Length: 320
Figure 1: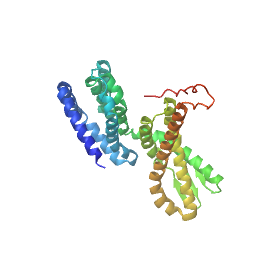
Figure 2: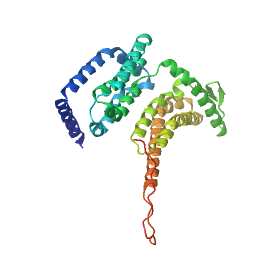
Figure 3: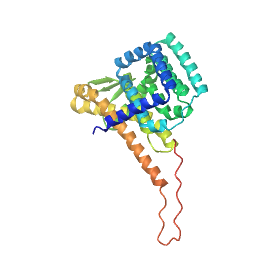
Figure 4: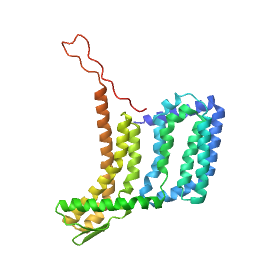
């Protein structure tokens, strides 16, 4: 039950041992971390302000902890890689971090500053730890990008066509079910119940959070690279389907229980329920694909009359 305390103690001992064996790298890492805190204080404050003000970005607060968990799960693999210095990649990431930080000074909002911080972290790993350790910790490092809120202008531009698609599809689905929903642009009317599909109802609230969960699921899966690409590409349509399902159910609730119930009870609580269902669907798909890959990779059973065992069925190449 308390095994995680032993893991934390072992982790602390490993850090102390690493600092004892490589004091110059340890001092350099701490110094660079202090510089990062000083240079990126303003962008981090802007990101915190934006993420705390819009429910679309609440998941940003979980990202650093998830990235730390990803690194912790792969700590043995990272530690097994040789220590070195990857100067070309490190200096390249440093240059990109400086360019993005200058862009943040002109644009504000935290987006360019957050991207610059991710590049700076990658630069530190490349310069202090080397090529192999950067490759093996890349998942945790670049996962930090999910903590960067996208500018509101970009969200609005992407949300409008999604609003249109949700409105049209919901209307068609309801009419096929015999529910007389009338659409005018993004306004749906059912008898005396009228609802406007705003940007928050377009599916954008769930899209970024589900992409974050999907990347975690895909990153720790044991499926071929083409299955991972298929799952990643399917997240967007899955979110749209779940959002349309939520809107259709809301119209059904309004028809039988009234608009007040649909807007108060169902509308407020359905976001989390639909999100959990979609995340569970992604997890189920991942497990099914893993089971299929393992089944194809098992050796063929020899028949009783066979003189020699049957050939092994080669499994498809998996992404590392």
